[in-house]
Image (tube, rainbow, N blue to C red; front, side, top):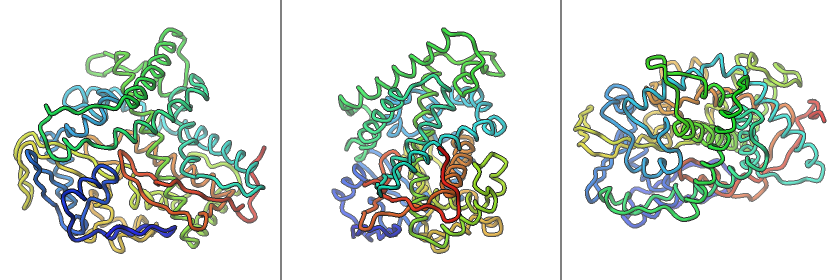
Length: 465
């Protein structure tokens, strides 16, 4: 049956069976609908296309086998490559083998936690500026689309941390608009891929997505060239670090093309995923007043009305649990794929060469055998005493193994800091009757946005002008 949506937290009601044409429709338009009940209960599910075997694995031991134990046998899926390479080129997200290892070595220092600490004030400063805008609008009862607001603040943050002052508002808006087109078009897989047709079968990008990708690439190339030509150095941002780092084994840096691909990868992935997770967190909080009240108490007791700093993160454990639980229920990347190079065996599962293996955080995080009350919003499940016996690969919002998302520490700092900053000032209330529906394409976002109103947090100061 199809989920009947309302402004109450989503609980999947997958059918026991689904016809081929219905499934193909869902795979193209909203692929979380394409998973029947057995995907939420079995350790793996095997389907066969015309020339390809499709396997979804959810058992943590099997997930670990693919991502860690035998990861060299599993390369980036050719299906996902066809989707992502036109946009991000051959950056960390799409490359494999020795080239990937080199790029990871070069980029890793830029995302070291000590380096990221310096960005905390940038994150809270951008959030505070958003609150000033909110304060000006709340008096007339204006309804905000919180999913758009979270996308805007995380885009501001990634622009400032990546480029410093090297990008203006018009350029930011152009990237945002292009990103929306790219996500919509590239997130709709061609039937040739869904049916498992050979790679030589033609796949084509739409004219508008080619134009959007070109706009993003030209903008990033222009910024890189201007920074190189300037030659002054001294910029305290990610771009400057990526320009200056060298491979410790070869002493070489990145070419402009390699740098462009990595910057686009970090730029787009670095704001869209966290924005979606924050939006879902506010939605969940609006439906659970007891959790919202506990969040308010924690931020008031720890911060007392001031902006949080990096050192406060250790004092805000419940804020972090809320963000972790939002990532569980609404993982920003609900599924990703690997392709088996050679035949493999793990437990009861035989994986033939060429199989498309899907790792689906959406399924693993709501799996009936892995979680108690899997569809409920329970931040306390991430308390240390409740997490200590959980398999590491039951919870994989950032993937795992050598290819774990390089920006995971950035996101796990940014999300709680923004939550704490906003929770000091406001409670967010979902507009009555607004329909909230998860939409899965490349990432997972609210299909109809999140229409919410603002309610000042009691006894807390207003945002300063």
